[in-house]
Length: 184
Image (cartoon, rainbow, N blue to C red; front, side, top):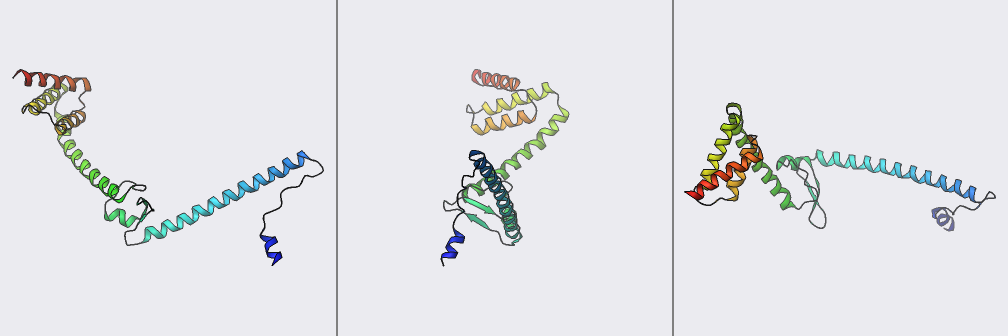
């Protein structure tokens, strides 16, 4: 029993040799190399084990979601990503955040596509002065009810951006429309 304990005990600290400090430096250098070698080997083994675990996890047909003790997502397999059309990394988020983000991303993409379809045709057929007139008319419509909502402001900014209208011209068109709405 005492032999088993001896074999499991940590290695004895290096002893000073006859050469003193130089010997200690050599031994310390050797120990550092051994430690670095062990770290590299352990890192490779951990990476291999993680890759194997991920391969098994992703080969599962069922959607799997792993949470930590705080309710944050740690792992999501490919089946769950496909099932819920998750296109962004959701690790570290709560379930509510993860699925709300996916929904918002999808809605935003649909709106951007609709605006792009519309504005790409205008970009093909209109020159810059025509685009500026159109943006100014859109501002007039937005100010027609005497109130500018955040949604109207955002839509006009998005369309002007997709039409490649310079920021200064965009602001001037807005100011002209705002002045006309106030004068009317």
